[in-house]
Image 1 (cartoon, rainbow, N blue to C red):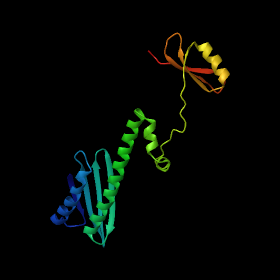
Image 2 (cartoon, rainbow, N blue to C red):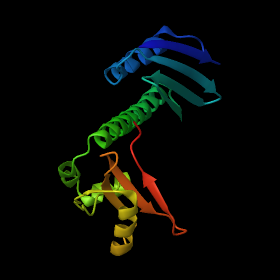
Image 3 (cartoon, helix red, strand yellow):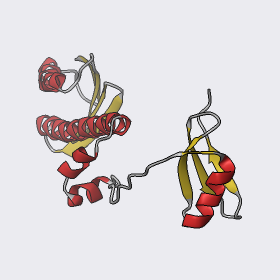
Image 4 (cartoon, one colour):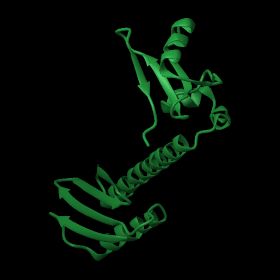
Length: 182
């Protein structure tokens, strides 16, 4: 990890710099690519302040701690950073896995998660699956069929193009047609 240490109102100390760099090296296991860290150590009256910023793998985490001892301020700031990094990595993995799952969704996988987990994560659950049989018909026949069954949409094979189409009812009573483009 590439680290820069800045001292404000404090004599530059190699021991403090080495301590901060050594402690920051434990974050290399969380980063896939090289990361950069900026450490600002400040003393204001009796307060020792450690500000640490880490930029790794497309996300930035910041931490600010004030104590009466500089070493404890560094330790506390690093503990905060570790929690933030773990949280961000979990979020990133969840987003990536959700995006991949939405491309190749299987209903069996949705049953693996408990309903409580789904509510906490904000993921919507499939509650009903309806299998339909669509038969070849022209658009006029599909409109008549929709009027008979009183559904809001109808999936059918267009007799003219032999492709699957979706006919749906608009709020104003007219119809919309979804057909694949060639």
